[in-house]
Figure (spheres, rainbow, N blue to C red):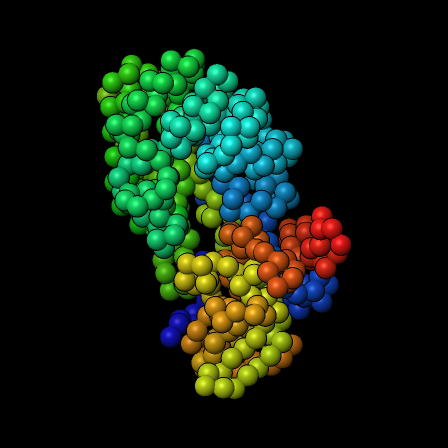
Length: 422
């Protein structure tokens, strides 16, 4: 049974969940319809500022992981905060360029792209974190100036197995031994500059893991450097900076985490390594996740072997829940915490029995037409949504300085069928 106490992790929500970023939730629902995602641009800005402050006085570059949320309005605002881009593929890199990023501020970390796509990235002169040497071989005669490889440091951590991306039984990266061969090949094919990359997993809340993983990563980098006599232009430690999805979970101590990373980096610099190297981090979730809520209308109240609340959203939008077993807090707008005294399951509109948004949650005795608030809707919600069952994607609204702006319209049947031969 879940906690009912509103955490300070969500400062933009009022105690009765009826205002978000100083705007009435009912006003947003009536104006834009539901389901809809509302973004607090203040919280987005605060998250970026907190990261920058934590890594102050280090040669750090922050690259936003576009896969977390590719809404152009959101990405554009992040870029304007002097944040670079981590692109998972060619399209994400192209979007960043369209929104004003310079190629030098983008690093692509693709997975199993075709030679044609890799060649286009190279022609844009975007640095590529190749997953393995075979991917580099596809464009060996047309490499970008900077070639990097993704290292599997042998350890990984993530909130779920599906978002743990290093260690054993993962599809990502290469061993340190294979990396030495790969960098030697890259130099033979004319690469002029080198980077090195890892990404160990997503939504990590333990600072000690960042201490251990970066120590191992920097050690691997020095061995490669010593073996081949190459210098690294950048060391990209990936992302993974977590956010709490439960109200009772403590947030990541970002100052402690940054301190561990900076100390490890400085230790190797004092030994003569990485003197001209940039240190790169790739936060996505940390920047945008808790800067948004999903507002959904209650469309059904059902009494069966369980009491069930039905919403006008579901797993088509919140695929993280059935995919990983993820948890998102759900609140009902307009009710005080002391009203949360009845156990419900919450389900969506998708024709699948996996379409549960939560089980056995304490909620108030709500009514059809009430508004449900789903927290942490900024990352991997809109970007992972689908139109399964021909259900539309939610509208998206940005809130800033007391004003609201539509930044994505609701999907309609016409927009969902665009491109099909009728």
